[in-house]
Image 1: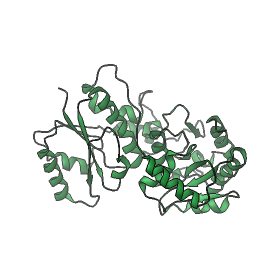
Image 2: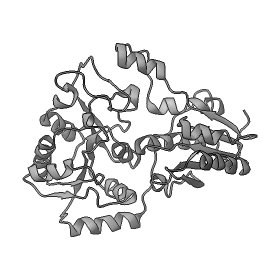
Image 3: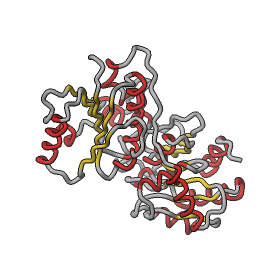
Image 4: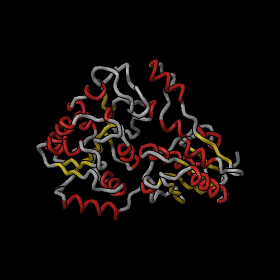
Length: 342
């Protein structure tokens, strides 16, 4: 394949997966520096990529757009004369859009469904030891890259004005120095750690490192309220009070980010902030894990049942969910100590 001049990358959801996709964009830009790269995602996630230095234009798609609207979007992209479209989602939505491509060359990600099924159903792991979500996302573009290419890190950008704005918000809420971010919510209950455990860690960090916890999350993340009520130290609870850009700006100035395998943990790493991730029902083969050298994974070791599903949506079939309930506050505090927080 000759080097494409214009590239359209498609990835519609979710936060963590879109963050990982920026690694592909970085790799493309490194080896195809003259190419112009556009990105298509859902409108609610488009702000995540604002200001990205390697993205020329963001196409926002309405989450409620039906078949006709998606087909029309595909025809519109065809009219923009892209040399290459890279579908890194390969869902019904993106497939409908791809049907509008006539002369536009397009490639798409292939999901490892069979390997996942064997892993979840029979606990047989046929994934390569080198497999990560980033290596997988790069598979459709391998022929564009040199033989021994290097995968670029994920990258997000937050402006200084955005940073200053949230610092003012946090100061008004009672912030009096350095802080760390806790993002305890998750789409599935199986990925959530106990509120009282989070509170214990927060209180110890206040004592040991003189640092406050800032909680972020969506409107429905009631666990944030529970954590605040359990904690003895001052906690700034901003869940449901910030938009996507404000949340990123809060993360971008934190000492570290603490939480389970969710989008803002990956966003933290894309902003060069170390994370401590609590690994429960998901695993490296499902996209979990960390990439920064300083980041830490806390997990209960030697669990034959993990991973049990791609995103933690499958209810635990054991009498007790050992993967999350087995994580102790002391383990998390040890991981935080390893970050070198002074």
